[in-house]
Image 1 (tube, rainbow, N blue to C red):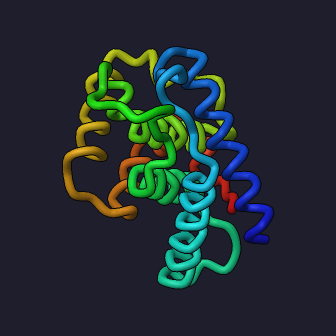
Image 2 (spheres, rainbow, N blue to C red; image 1 turned 90 degrees about the horizontal axis):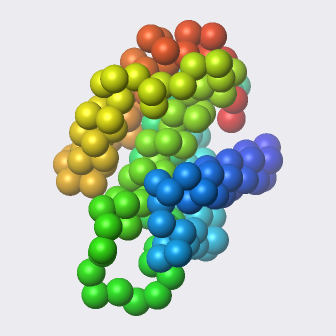
Image 3 (cartoon, helix red, strand yellow; image 1 turned 90 degrees about the vertical axis):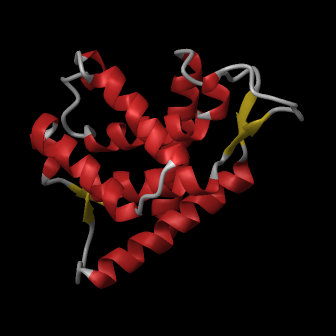
Amino acid sequence: MSKEIKDKRIRCISEAFRILGENGLIPIDTMCLSIPLLEETVEYYISDMEILKKRYNIDDKIQLHKIAGLLAYAIARIKPIIPVQKIESFSKDSEMYANEILAVYEGLAICSEYDTGFNITREPWFDEWFDNFIFLLHHRQYTAESLIFIFETISRIFFPKAFFSTDG
């Protein structure tokens, strides 16, 4: 099962990186997704997921907001997006925060997996919330479980159909 989960998460993160690049949210001309770091990120996620399942006596699959929080934590910790070449300084915020941008959008994509009719990024509060979330991930202290709680709150309010769905 871990191989299946690993392959699925690698595909999902790779696709999210591609989409974010196509939409100009991550500069793919200067940043790339490191395959070894991506694999380490997903392995870290799987390890954390197994710990969470054991801690809370979860026998089967976990809820989507838990996946989102654990995966966002792993992305922000391991940082699989790296500069294409050696650079002296970042020329855009999206270069410095590329991993955090990926972490938040991947988490939101997971939370909305079964409730795709709503686009949360169009909400009037989203940009400020997003900037604050990026700041938290890059500059402040947090745990994987605190990120789970953030994604749980978003899911309960904006993705109620997906809230009770599970995956691995």
